Amino acid sequence: VAKTSLSSPPWPEVKLPDPVEEAKYHAEVVRKVNGLISAGHYGRLFAVVHFASKQWKITSEDLIMMDNVLEAECGDRIRMEKVLLVGADDFTLIGRPLLGKDLVRVEATVIEKTESWPKVNMRFWRRHNYQRKKIIANPQTVLRINTIEIYPCLS
Amino acid sequence: MVVLSAARWVRSRLTDRFWRVQEVLKYARHFRGRKNRCYKLAVRSVRRAFVRSTKARREKKRFLRALWITRIEAASLEHGLKYPAFISNLVKSQVELNRKVLADLAIYEPKTFKSLAALAQRRRQEGFLAALGDGKEPEGIFSRIVHHH
Image 1 (cartoon, each protein chain N blue to C red):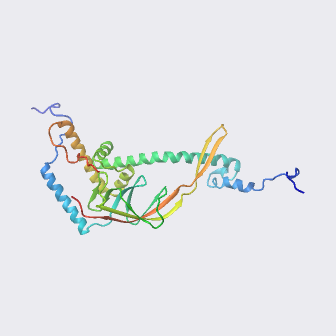
Image 2 (tube, each protein chain N blue to C red):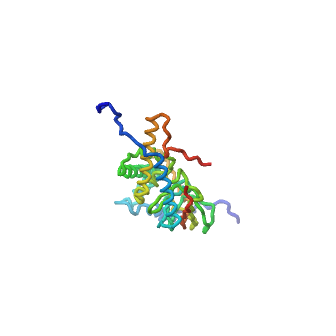
Image 3 (cartoon, one colour):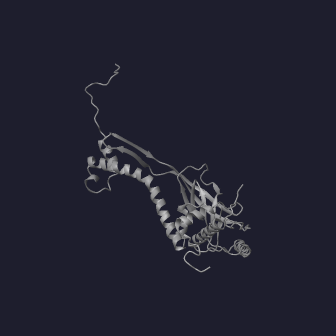
């Protein structure tokens, strides 16, 4: 067919790589990453953790402050289980959506439980003699992330 | 003798007016002009400041989300993807990272963001093939849904 402006579709032709070769490549990559993890050739690990209905990007020796109460005493060690992503300099492990508990381990300690600074909540309607003032101090918890560990059990 | 009601010639006087006034002026000390010294002007300014801060606390969330989206858009354009394509393909690949974390990764972990962009691009291409081919071709690898139990 002669090449005219309407002989081929206007969007670019998309070709996926060969599935067999792809599978070999994937297996090789998994083996390499497993080797790196078991040999310990990674520096600082960072992780994205879902905790207290928020997502945090954390490393070790990190301080985290959340705007709620945690039912744990000061000094308790906590393991965070919902890990979405773990990465180092050479590789990243992306969870869909979460990573397995036998793959990553994130430990944290509760450091302090305080209240926030007194925030002022005020409502005022002009010309209606309506004003309300309320002082709110939310409870806050501070956590220190101790360690992030990964284990070489990829497949 | 027992006195049940206070004597009528004793009137109560306001003795702590200074402290009541200072309670309001302490929030106005960093204002400009006479409203940081004169009570009558300060009361109005402090009231408006409190109301504005309460409203701003709700709008801050909107601003921050728009900022994150701008940053993610800029970073994904560096890798050749537009923002809606990036986000929709990430969601279709079951990667549930929110915009705050994606913006942080784009700033501090460029390699990780590049890999996420590549994942989104591949999922997009598989989506195109699935929509156009619409036949007995095998499904793409990255379009498979992971089932957790």
